[in-house]
Length: 122
Image (cartoon, rainbow, N blue to C red; front, side):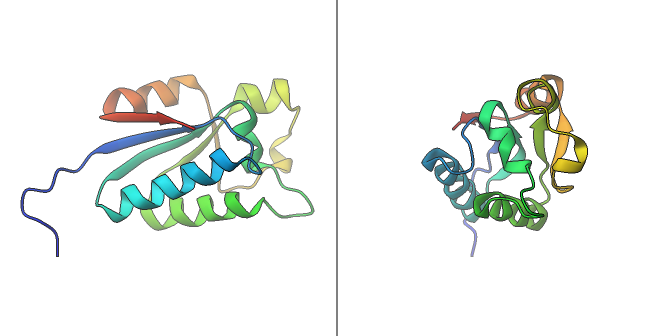
């Protein structure tokens, strides 16, 4: 049962940590908790080493990336990889990325952040 006067917050998450880093898992658990409390996630933006969440290795993504994919699909929020970092810093092609992650830029992140009440970086 949801409380009558419950405040729903729009959140944007920015994940800068690689999938194997503990901060990546912390971000995922934060997202789960926020959603369980009834808040909305507008977008998860993967930047710096965070773009490696979208990288396919032997046809698979890292376990935490698979968790992000399921959560994003269940709750209807986009998972955006910074296209500039993907291309320039890691030289990854579109074929090397899971299709559940979209390429975008700081413009998409800024637009989502401007509409959110909270922006959190991990």
